[in-house]
Image: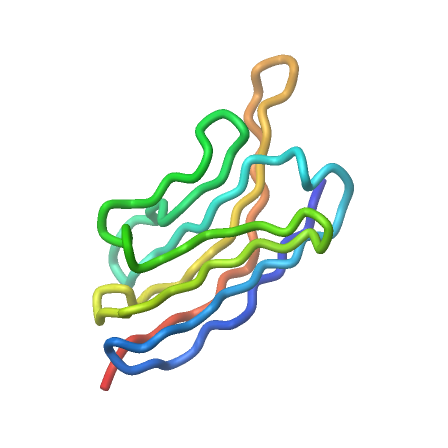
Length: 120
């Protein structure tokens, strides 16, 4: 089991940049699939980017070319570098780590979220 804590959110003007961090505590983090999700007011949570051993790095079409996800397994930390931010990027951003057990059960762990507001 891992515990995830996000940071780095805040208010930024359109066109600006932010870097989100997610620090994980617990064993085995380097073997987990990881991702960043976001949830805007009144909308469902959606995948922003993910890094997994099976699929590499994947980005939502809406953030391709603007966001970059990375992970540092030595620091047990995920990052989401966000550039050219738009008002539609406003949301609460959550980091996720998970794996599939040998019995086929999916276990997912979530951070508490960090709020990003893009506004002039």
